[in-house]
Length: 210
Length: 200
Image 1 (cartoon, one colour):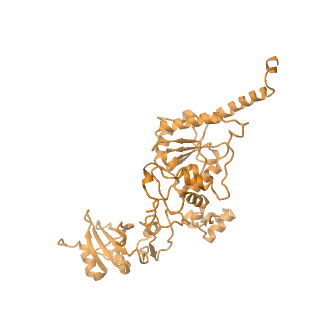
Image 2 (cartoon, helix red, strand yellow):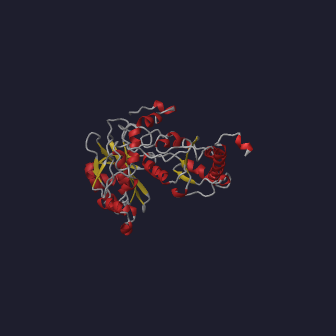
Image 3 (cartoon, chains in turn red, blue):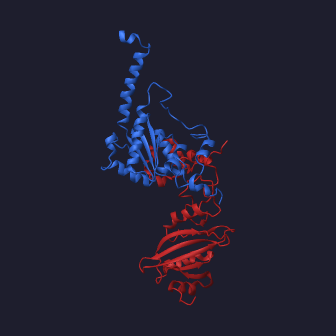
């Protein structure tokens, strides 16, 4: 690569050395920086708090699995500095054969909460330190796996009848905690069974067929 | 009495039943309160049908009941993900008899283009359906035609004929409306999606 590195990438290289992997420039000009998994939190905190960087806004967290099974999965963080009006993408590579886990950036940006839940829901990537890591798009008793993985069959693993059975047996109210329902004030007015269920934090279960 | 004497002994009764059926069915058909269950682009066409240009209030649907307790016809406008299946079933169960269901659009009727892990392949696996309106999405004329077909169907029902008057259709002990074999059969891929493999 003959073009000079983007300034943020240069600064990252200078500060973190070998923890910074290859650097690419995306077609729209955004720098893409690959970071070692173990030092992700350090790098992110530095990007957020260093006065010259000020990446204070986490735009999105997502993940990619490529058709080439040899390639590792990538967790992608889109950062933006609202003050400096610049963007950067941080990528962490995860070997599909090893444990799919990465540190949660929830402590730096609380907005990562649902974004990381979605990545967990769709790819099965665990975010260590996330306060409430559970499914967000699929229901919590969903047992077929992680739909956006390349190994996941398009129509799901179960037969249609079993899918319908599980769906119809799901309790749509069992997926919310007391805080999410915003009924903490009205707890005394709730039906007994609902109050008990919410107190236990029960998420609902699906009985086995037959 | 002379005129009647030549008829069957049930002649008066059947006349009476016809009259009652006519009165009841006309009342029902001409004041259907829809319960809109709009999940996708079909709901936009549904709103167009409700709005001034097409105005289904002309057919007695003036009041849209956003409470299932006060609704007569559930209109599922749009694709139904598995996550919403228990919701539409509960709404259907909460509706009072008599109740009807219109499945609006390809996705509600068959799963449409969404032959994937997340989508119910036809809402008739969840609730009984009276009228299927094809289209992706159907134009308001299509939905109006479906509504008129439902009127026709309602006017053919009889209070005195148990076969023609559908009762409550509860879920069986497995929590299903149809047998698993039937669900698998009607969820079979068709059209272009037969060329997609079940396993990746």
